[in-house]
Each structure stands twice: as structure tokens, then as C-alpha cells.
Amino acid sequence: MANTTKHSSSMATVYNPNYIEVLTHKISLRFSDDTGYVYPDRIVTRSQKEAEAVIASIKAHELDTELLKVRLRRYPYERHLVDVDVKNLF
Image (tube, rainbow, N blue to C red; front, side, top):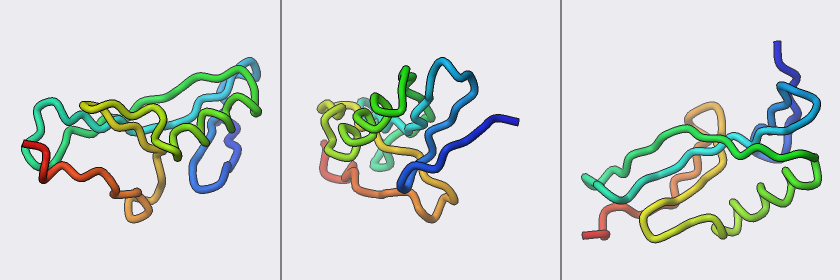
């Protein structure tokens, strides 16, 4: 079983002591049908400090582009942050 470290409202998962994975959702707005396509992803970091910096940049929407939004994964599903507006894109 993997060791997990709770970090604020997200999970930073440690599978290998040499790196930390920040679990994310990417929301694609390229072919939006008013819902956006969401898929799981992860950002691999080498230290807790780097993971915290990545988490802060995700929360500040610094990794977002016009057609792709990045959000932290949150569980259970009811805790997902719904802040990407896909209804007024087209």
C-alpha cells in the first residue's frame, strides 16, 4: 500500500521515496459540449517543498491556459472544486 501524505485539501501521494506526485484533474475546453472533458493527471516533484510550490501554483491558476484548466483532485467527489465555466465558451 502506498504511503500518502495529507496536504491541505488535496492528496500528495508518495509511491517512491525519490519523488512526490501531486494528483490533479485536467479540464479540456477544446471540444467542450458545455461540460468540459475531465481527465486525471499528476505532476511529479522531487521534494515536499517543490510539491507545495506546485500546489500553490495550481490554486493560483498559474498552470491554466485558454483551452486547459488544471485543478487539484479532491475526494470524495462532493468536495471537487467546480470553478471552471464551460457554458459561455462558444
